Image (tube, rainbow, N blue to C red):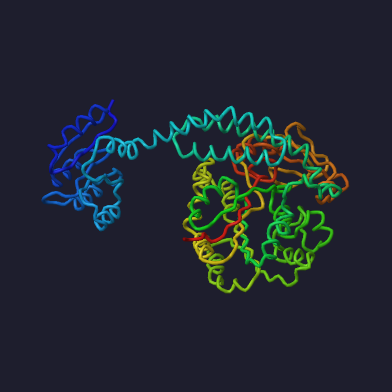
Length: 522
């Protein structure tokens, strides 16, 4: 079996006989020519895996030949072989998108290395990645079993996301095994939440040192200390932004900023109405409803649930006696809103705190549920991340980060909650006033299989509003979602494998909180 078909173009090809024999023994088929014209003819007849091209040749030069080869075989990697190390020649070659270059005299091991890098890279990376995951499989399982604290679960989640990104970038057959391990981890995480969440949020124990950083602590514990040090803070809240999506984004902006990455825990329910309002108010949902009833919107009200975010920020500043803190608030729902933000960018420097909410990913998540076309475009986790990355690259957000990288702002990037691909239905029965969210329900007389859910029968202990004395909250865990017995099959087929949020999973609750400063250049 051939390792690949090569074209070697050199006007002194007869001197390279030993190199060609070496490559043939390694399993490569090599066609040789001594000039650019013949090389172009061969490219019209064969689909080469790689071309080795001499830069200095009589007649058509190597660079001219390169341009024509690229027109015929745009995807074929071309390696330039040259005696010259002149900078302008190198720049021209690189500008013409060569895959690599070698300086004469070349030795066989150099050639073999560039072949592996350019022809076999994918297979080698896949093999190494698979081997790495297999070697770490038992260690990861052991870590899952031994998780006792929030930090333990955050470490496990980071490891799982690392391998998910590594495997998804290859043609690996290990992805299914990783998803099973991730499901196992989410089952353990759900048990952990059941055992600890009520203690964290109970008003009597909410100040306990064991309580993790949660939504209502973000301003007081992360932002105010920065402002107190005299730093100008730019807070970007990307709605429904998962840790794996952040890791993709980090690769794009890593060379712009010095990055301090951490995770924090969203409150329940993991939806905007509760979690984001908690961020901006610094209060738990019942506290908002009691202290500022005009700013809280109940589940059964038709009014938008996130229309009072700027007033909520103001209440938090006043409560912490920070009346001298100047802030701005912007919500970006589309390109028009983004353009408007950039136009105002220079004026924002007058403020101590600038808050920007970006809704694209949440809109994508909902559109994927409702639109068959969007569902096809984002038909799995990897595709969902890919669309997120493409959005970032081609929207004003990319321009915003570039501007921030040239400024003295301390940038804090976070979210209110994540989402999970929900694939397993759980039957639930409730009255007509039960809310419509697929990952959590609140209402009277809710009935479902208790082992699949987390039930809060005393909402006041979790600092959640209770419209009725008998109201309870029920949260889906892992990758489950709620479905009613009526029209069950239709309901399940419509919502299965859609990205949902509101419940309990690492993807929804363990979410990025990233501090970035302009990279210091030497």
